[in-house]
Length: 251
Image (tube, rainbow, N blue to C red; front, side, top):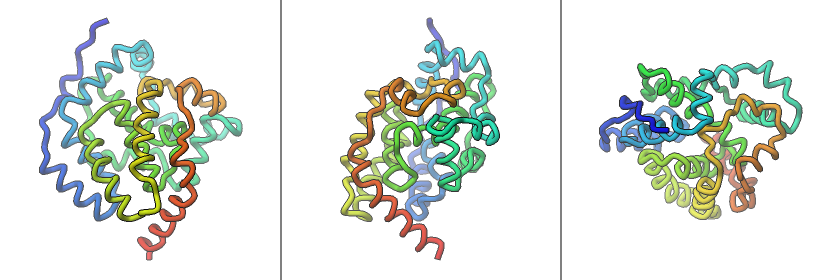
């Protein structure tokens, strides 16, 4: 089935804006709005191509037809709390609370970073959904919120929906993290994440809302997600380094 919409997703590449945002992100890696600014500045036609791929898939069209609002679902903590232990929904709830996060916080960061409200409702739904699924990517891929885990999630995502902005962040992030933590296999873990993204099913068309009550391991098998072995071996160390960084930052 042919599909060609979302022309408003086409945009010029603006490297100077990306470099300015990258400088600020390097200065403070918690400034999530800069990530959205970098991606926006370098996205070019990538979102246009990926949106059309989404709408050509049967699952993507069904999500769009249902007007599925992922943010609304992820903000419904009472609903998530009804999910049994070991399910996707409970794992997501434990992740966001354990890390002091909220689904709303990511949306606010994207707005600060200049995420647009598009005229085409399908385009708006797709862009919001891609943003709102970020922490679900963490949950199903097994990557934590430490610096290495975030880098791996970006590398995984870039294998699924290539974007020059995300590639730029990963390319800068690998040597930067390696300098900061020489004991971590940064490049190896990031490359493994990219290979996992290539081998996995398309997470952008996954109907998350319909799978919240399923066992997380069943979801991972369906999405063809094997364990992140390199990251798992150093996760404890990476998370300790993250705690040390946050303690210094708060002080």
